Length: 87
Length: 348
Image (cartoon, rainbow over all chains, first blue to last red; front, side, top):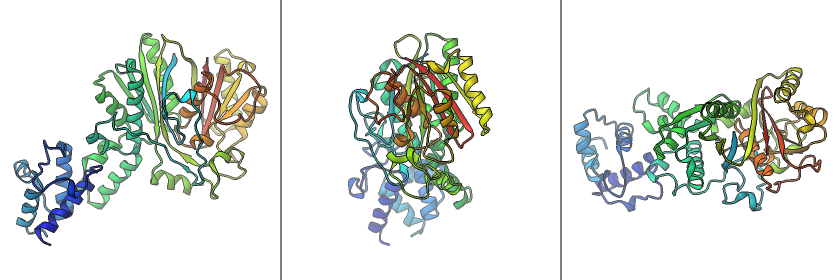
């Protein structure tokens, strides 16, 4: 899977996990920040994203500081997944 | 204690504004499952909360907040009381499945948070910054009568109180299949509006949310009493109904209208027939489950329908018996599971 394919898959998974109504993968850019942007995600969503990484990519985030670095936008998440060699 | 405001979402178009003065086209569903008609909740529930809500939480929270928007005096209610049998069962089952599937690891918070029955009253309280008494009754089909009594106790202690009382139930795959397996639903498909005249076993299911604003100090429909009995024994049920009327010092002939929970199950008519033909044979008789389906909280919808008729709304359907009497004193009698009996007495 290429990085671009991974990003599209991630967007689809985020929309599904967070039940983002009326949002399509095309509606948010790779660098749209998850928190504090028009996506309007909050702390409960950050837990859902942690669960998504564990279920879909077998990546456990146990250190909150690490989570803050990864759960920034699609680019950061995709880089982290590739770095861990999980695709 | 009086009903001074109400709002209901149901399988019929009851969510429209000024519902008591408008005609609605009745749904005649042939799937044996009457699903709720939902309005858009976007003006009432923030989007980031709405997307997390399962159906029961969504219709419950939405209906409660919509009543408050229509009747702002209930924004600072002195009590929020919610009644349900199952709450958000669909989310609850999702969460339990996750526990099994993921070995108690990697569990998402949303399904758990949204599946607890008290999420509904909690959401309404948070949305309105209301820190008053907040109670959820989860006691099968007795929940609504329990909620009415709780409200009655509360208003006895605080006569100036304003109370928001709600009732919610959803159809989930889980409860539908369990109830279907135990023979609750008809095996043949029928038109829902023909439910009451059906001559086969089983019923059809429904869902919805009904909210009421209660107060002592305004004009409205007076709630005289509510009672419950767990028994399938006909003599005990007859004694229960007669005792209820005696305790409230009312003669059967003073009841001008019966609102009965006939559910189209040919094996579940005996007690309704007793009330209609033996105990109170000269009253108007209305039914409501052909409109709303059967579910543990459907008595709240029969209650809503009765209060609307008392206020002068035209009946949605011809009564089962038209005694040509004014609709002032109404006895609502409902059974669920053949052994959960609820009575509510209301007066104009």
